[in-house]
Image 1 (spheres, rainbow, N blue to C red):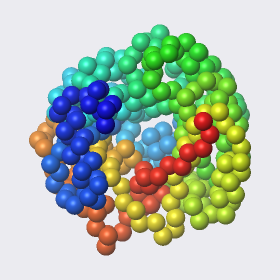
Image 2: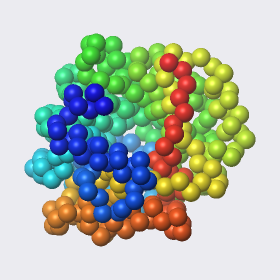
Image 3: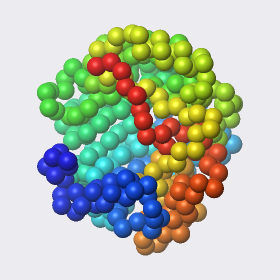
Image 4: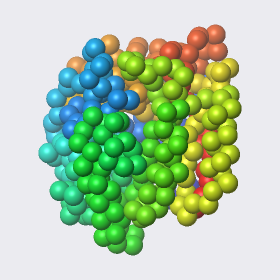
Amino acid sequence: MPRLIREHRPGQIVNTLRFAYHALRGFPVTRLPYDPNWLVLLITARCNLHCYMCSFRNPQCPIPIRSSFQDMPLDLFGQILDTYPRAIVVELSGGEPLIHPRIFEMIHLAHARRMKVHIPSNGTLLAGKMEALLQAPVEILNVSFYGTDAASFAQMTGADGALFDVVVQGVAELARRRRAGGYPRRLRTSFVCSKDNLHLVPDFIRLSEKMGVDDVKLRNLRFHDIPGLPESTSLSADDPEVEEFLEDLRRQHFRIPVFLPRLPRQDDQRRCDHPFRLVAIDGDGFIGPCCVKAAKRCWGNLLEQANLWNGPAMLQARRVQTDPNSPLPPICRYCEERIPERPRLGG
């Protein structure tokens, strides 16, 4: 609470408290008396990798999800901030967000509105953006790693394995040059875990320690809509092999905090708070109800319609998440975003 009051404007504080109140009550209504607390802005669909677990760029996807929108114009970015000024977090995502030619202008515009900027990146462009990143007011920079050496990186990304060393060197330099209390405030690495790559996780954590990052986040593979990824590749809390892996990880000592993947159970019916907390918007102005489902025409367009936050599509997305008689959509079943607990070890 003190940090919320210290770092945000009165309207943002009140909006956050209203969201928290409704969250404590289990979101009793679908027409919300507050604005989105979090904005996920898909500022580019472009990426320089072709990761097999990514619906954006997997070449096997018959219709790559969210791959056809333009780079978000700066005036649309400003319009979004004007429309939702009470948000406290702006995630600049994509695609690879550092490809966007005006991303640093966006960072400073959001910061001027007292909004925390989060950026997920594949890290391949850090070296060329180093000076700007050290000056840009970014709260969290999350660098996703796809492997622990050149060979595993190439296998997972479809890119030249030499890029692996580029990413490692970029993260290490950013960590080394970042001044105390400087930017990015938190430098994190993350790793998408599947049954096929669990053996790489300890090496990844050790590598992250050597690079000097603040913490590590392990994520569960979301396989829905990705050709060639069967359900069995995702991690489940009911799987003895996964349980054994986590127990082995807990027996090891890590110097930095490690956030473990959030795992569903076979009978897990927990619902997601994303449609109640955030809105995703792509470069063409189309919206979506979470950070996973595509922003697309059926949800509405910020440039064409008013009050989309409480529009018919968002209301329906919330009903699905609150109705115990409504089955979970397939895309939600193995999505870790609906599981609130994220166990931690190390640090």
